[in-house]
Image (cartoon, rainbow, N blue to C red):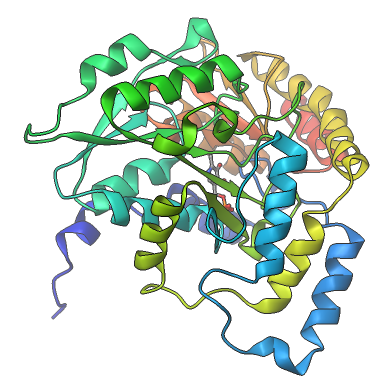
Length: 390
Ligand SMILES: Cc1ncc(COP(=O)(O)O)c(C=O)c1O
């Protein structure tokens, strides 16, 4: 006998990487040298000062108890200083910031806080899978909005407007997920795009949730926060994270930024779900947020150095790709000669022991695409190229 699951568990699929990485682990256990260029898991270390702060804090006998649900004041002040320095955005550390256990959990907290069953959620037709999965988990209606490939994967605002259901209708549109620099296509953020998004949210009275974990990775111009747009705080909140920009993905350190009423509402939900973060992690994150501009430049120089090897790999596969992508990945279109992304992924995994991500996990539009991660040393990517050519 097995007790029946809730409908949401029946309807939700296990995260693709949760399943596929088990296959990768199995191959590794069999002694195969798998080159994993599928996932965005930074392979470099956080700054030395960050690690020193972690160990110093962990040695304090007072560091091991429950902490505030809103994180330490020092962490919130450090995030506010980071926003001022990086994006020119002023945030009140007391009222406009909420530390999170990684930004991924923020997607769930925002959805629980703002969505009633049946509410419409605008989700990019290609994007981080959690937007769609969590919307479905809370019983909301996913409204996929198109991205225009020929316009650098920008949202099609006119089409999006047609998707919006007004208040009072059975599925009123309540929330819009946006993410630029965009994962998986690497499309950069622009001020004009963010201004358009804020106008759209005002016009349609929709909460705009911007997810901003890649603004510091391989950015070709100054990083932008959506909250830098006039009037953004009325209708928008922003998730951000140390996972990618500070090489701290396993630390689970992110935050939500926005106006006090939004932060307070999310805290009401979140404080019933978890009991805050470990103080040494918060003390170390406080230190990490002060990493110098040079530290970020050096990290990007390593990723930049890996780009040519990834381009060589994609050329070997006959893929086409844009060369101005930002973030941790390169998004590439398959040649007509490849039957399907799923078949290619399995062929590379089992015949060449190279793991890449198929585009369809980010939405049906990604059917003929693959995504390659930059989180592997250049020599390993070159080794992958050699295996492909062999
Ligand atoms: C677009 C996007 N948003 C959010 C996340 C989650 O990041 P975090 O580690 O902060 O939970 C990721 C992680 O890959 C991502 O690609």
